[in-house]
Image (tube, rainbow, N blue to C red; front, side, top):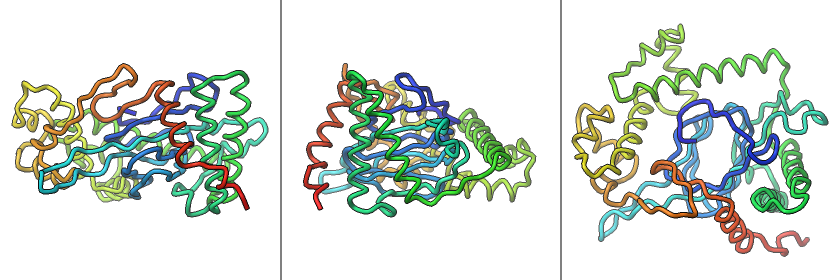
Length: 330
């Protein structure tokens, strides 16, 4: 999830289902055609889904509809008498499910549009614990690959989807409406990809509006409603992310980093960092987490995808601490 574009989900273990355990500092806006559940295994952070912002914490479960733009980030740094405290990235379990999953038995899955959001708002306490348990058990099966694990995994994911259909607001559209949604997603993909390729230069809203054959007013409304921020705010976020990428090169000064990221004025870069992270670029660079481990796959400075062994460690710790047999007693 390091690139800002339509993400093509690949299924390395089992068809139509992919799972990841990630520690996330920042994952930029992206979309994909799969449904996505995420469970916060540790810490606190932020999620932006379909232009709505949420603060998430350990134990929270959210559902993201196919085609909804979404992003994740850690909470800003806190200041105290000793100065700025380092950002502590939250750890997530992601369960991505293709809209072709079990379509031979339930063809409606291909054309279902859900309302993304917090499952705690629509499930009972017992149902919420059941979904938490099933997602974790399915992930343990996924990363363990014990004998016949596929049967347990498919059963748990199907049960979670069944509860989602029962409780979460949704509609089943026709094939023509489905194609219209796909065209909108393709447009958002083009917009994100263009910004990703050009944010370090002078980039104008008018250029993208012309590219999509839209008026400036229509494009501006489409952008804000899809991403939850203005065009300029989105570009500034891209530039800050580039600043962080360049900070790992200790030979570059902050002035050089500012210009190479597309900020024409270093003071404006400082202002953006204070607004987004609660600290200056200098303070952020000082506290930047540069740890490396043989047990983790490092993706830039924004996301850590854990291998199977570390993923199981986080999942089993969560299950031991958060899920008990008493949760399912009447």
